[in-house]
Length: 326
Ligand code: PBG
Figure 1 (tube, rainbow, N blue to C red):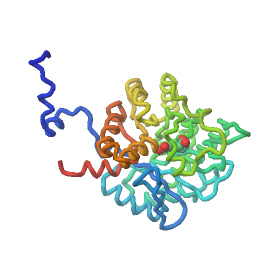
Figure 2 (spheres, helix red, strand yellow; figure 1 turned 135 degrees about the horizontal axis):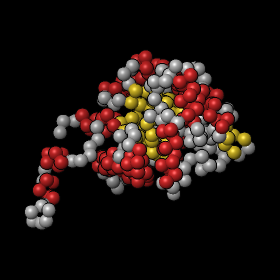
Figure 3 (cartoon, rainbow, N blue to C red; figure 1 turned 60 degrees about the vertical axis):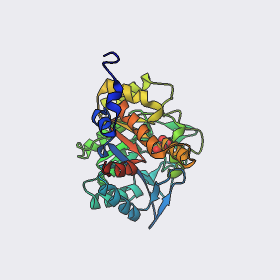
Figure 4 (tube, rainbow, N blue to C red; figure 1 turned 90 degrees about the horizontal axis):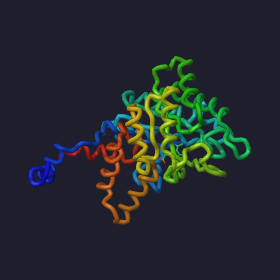
């Protein structure tokens, strides 16, 4: 293997050669597109810090999904933005809430598309926290009942998969039990298993109108300094019945993605979150970065670290690029 016998540059000489020996590549099948849906009609409002991403009313969402399914993107993740918020996030589990109606409409039009719903309370509570609040404390166990109710209502509306993102202890088990009791034992759960308390969620919170009105989420989301704890979180969620586990955010936590894949060898999702997207977009807009190239590099690094699927606001752009003849 010594120079000059082995010359690594021999296989880097052309694009075709590089493609032949590439160890990791992105495929349309890896992509999950997050989408925001709100009440109203004929609304498609761009999220300022996330160019190319919008808040849709249901009618315009259907239009967008025509595009998404034509591009061959297999799955979407829905976030609902209700008109009314209250202390206990009632709209999160209302039979005719925004997310429940959106799911029903979408599954009716696009039965083959995998519809995943984010299960959380923060977009629906007046205080913006992911669970029930007493004073300044977010209570764990009373929140489980509401999360289980929300998950069940999504599945009853037609969701193919639910994705709890709240980080309450025991919520995967509570949701699994509730779904099973109602005959949905075949509906998978994607657990936001290692979800960190991250400032990279900033643009999302603005988009989903879910910024906590007091305090922050550090008493339930994970401390960014911890890796061993992430493995314990994943282990717990698998034991409680998670079918797919997730690490979030992705880029600042590639080591966690790698370790989770090595240790558990389960289907693994990584969430390339709003702030990761916004930062590359901002660099590109300023002319400081080549937007398309940094996109590939970032997403490839997430895949190479071990993710099987990537939730990304780049999904349409990637799918479009992958469809272009080489
Ligand atoms: C809801 C939720 C959040 C994100 C996904 N689900 C926000 C948060 O936890 O504050 C963030 C996604 C993103 O930033 O793209 N709990």
